[in-house]
Image (cartoon, rainbow, N blue to C red; front, side, top):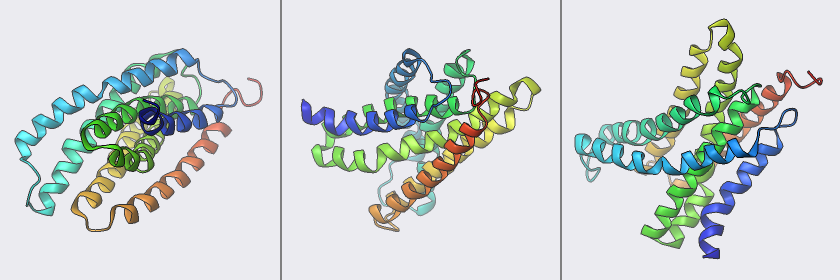
Length: 228
């Protein structure tokens, strides 16, 4: 039991704690963060159903062309997973009165992704064994969380621009950015054009660099930075 928690829960919780500690000026209520993580965890069931439906249309991967794999990774994987994560953020914390500064988009998106990635990792561990769970903890969980953080940055910008009716472009940018990062990484891994670690680790490094820029940008733009 302890091993399952360490593999599935600890990496995601450490990432969530890191992002929570970056929320310096108006920290979000833990209750809402936990609710977002729970909703993220339950996303695995609709994701599985939608991906099963997509496989029925696209067929199993098997010995198929790179174009087929591209369609699978962007539609059955990236579009379904990022779309449902976006849906939860947009219709749960985004509407809350607590979502009142740019960084809030990042922390709530990360909370949803942590719940989703932890449950997905648990399923993988139970089906494929401990080695698969460890591998996903190192690569897949951070990918989900960092991709969500990028999406959340633009949702934070969207919320700030909502009163001016200029939120829609930021919503689309955030969603499409997450879609591109997720789909591209999954495509390169599934096609084995590049060894998994050789593509995943640099991509995670790029995402971390981008996320640090987004964190700093969100903190600077906080209306509470000077005690407001």
